[in-house]
Image (cartoon, rainbow, N blue to C red; front, side, top):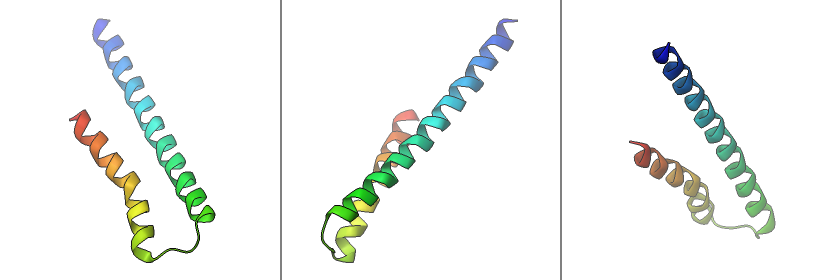
Length: 66
């Protein structure tokens, strides 16, 4: 009984984390779109540095979970 409850709790926690990651990715994409629309045309290098910010944040969060 306790093992089943623990397993169910673990599955639910995993589901919530995955949902939060999807929401974070969506917000990051929206932010990048807003920033791109508000700023004047930039060089490819500036755009690349902005788009890699979210990837860097994701990598850091992955390391923190480990």
